[in-house]
Length: 469
Image (cartoon, rainbow, N blue to C red; front, side):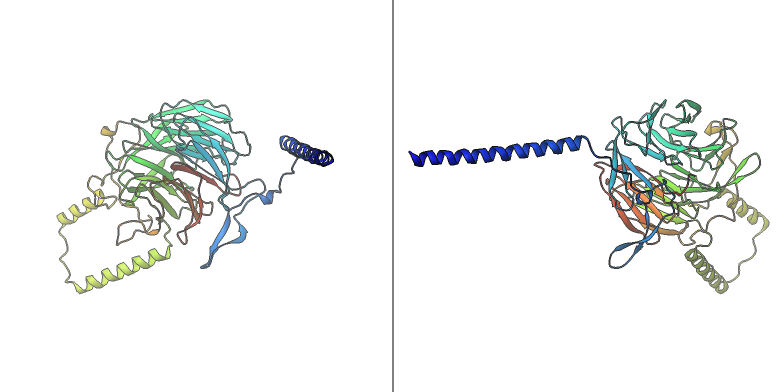
């Protein structure tokens, strides 16, 4: 019938149009797949477009940033990376908080991170090895692996020119590696698990702290232990830090106590003089870190806080507090009846007590500093006492501690590690709550929070220096 024939012809035309449309869509999808498989050459962005950490300025309405970046030179961007128990290493754009790169570390958790001074490589310390990654490359595989430790690696640091690297481990050793060949150059033995190691700025000495409570100084030239410090008997030293100018040495232990020594460099030897101690936290100290300008000391703790302490003798609040305390003491002493002068015997006993209490701490068995010029057994280390150094940092007369500048208290769990910015104005912390945080120290506020880890973040490395150091 004509009607049926017309309907058939109309249906055929519709099917033909549909088939042509399907063919057109298939060709378009195939073209897209080809384009994705063979991307166009995209010119590299100009160097000034690299992410840079800007100086933040806080307003009451919103967070704003000034247009002046931290000093930087072409090709020397801000490198910020974190790692932890989720077996990943993450690189972050410091200003935006965006994770720009993730490297899988399937062997183990990552315990420590360190960036080479020229910003070319990142060292990731895991369970028994250290992997070296090319920062500028997209290659997820390490360019070199350093094998030799038999337990967790707890510390890693680079020579100022990146020629060698030092590591510490719970296997009780400190090892020095040639970064050009990967070969082992030195092997120093503690009698307990080693929790941390740093390089003295003179590049000729290493300083390590162990679980038995011993801080050792190693001379690389002579390949011997030159100093052995026991600030507190049978109390594990969790972290050590040395000032960028080599003037101070600091350690933190599992009781939350901090010990500070002055390091005096002579022509042939280094004198180590205790200048103060105090309880910074009521729980474990996990990390201590001296700022680049040596005016601040950061401490990270299992009490869910990080604290920043003052070391600057010109710190205005410290001067004002000490003056107020001295004025009050003078006023009280003028109102009291003068006491009789002590007898010579009493004066001698008092002087001896002052010599023994070199750290002026209330805890017993913390009075003595044990120091030796050779790596003897701790039980045989002779006791030597020193009077407090008059040029030490200002102490708060009301608390017996360094002056506390700020407490960074927004963490939900243990604070494991921290890193100062080059100008000492900012601090990055990492925490078991999975987050890394960028803090402005003048205000004690969070500038940026970095979210991406699925388990605890336990180590951080930051290099925003404008030139290799």
